[in-house]
Amino acid sequence: MAREDGADGVELDVHRTIDGELVVFHDAAVEDFGVLAQAPFARIRGAFPWLPTLAEVLDECIGLLVNIEIKNSPPDADFDPDEGVAHAVVELLRARGGDDVIVSSFNFPSIERVHALDPSVPTGYLTGLQVTPIDAIVAAVAGGHRAVHPFFGMLADEGAATVVEAAHVRGIAVNTWTVNEPTEIARLAAAGVDAVVTDVPAEARAALTG
Figure 1: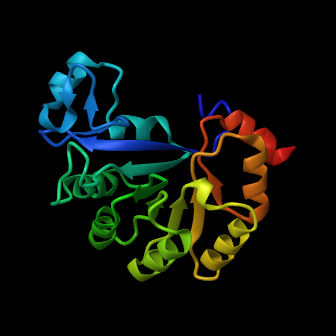
Figure 2: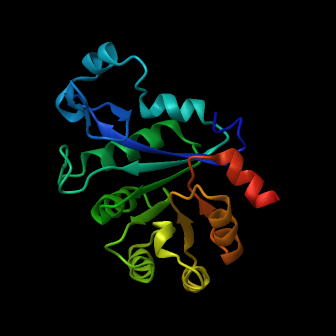
């Protein structure tokens, strides 16, 4: 549907099952089932045939950019300080080859691990209200990451252009989330952001081309 609506890519969240499969789902747990990381993939697939693996999504999204978000913050039900998801994502991308991806996370150590394992995999620092976009840019530059992904509410008014300029002079892209209002999409595009994550790609496309 994203492709049909004119999206350039998709954003998704990835978790690892107890037997090492990477699955795509927003939350660490599924209601009335439990934490995905505590279950084998066969049980998950049996209960939820619609819940895809990362490999299946990458196959479906050939020709699109895929923003793979690693969910691995300390408060998460499946938090793993050993960064098993980061390792598994890098292994999968190496085995496949050729996927157009960027790996992002709110958990800075997760993208640090991805970059350490394979610097050729683009990484982005995903931030909300706790980290300013400028601080995120400084951290991204120091870590060798390609982008910052600030919450769009942190890019208000003239501040958006200032952040974009600060990022671009350092070779860092600015990909902001989740922007659904056409006027906001147009405003951020005018400020020079490199990408907007949105739930309404058809409306976003119209806002960008209209």
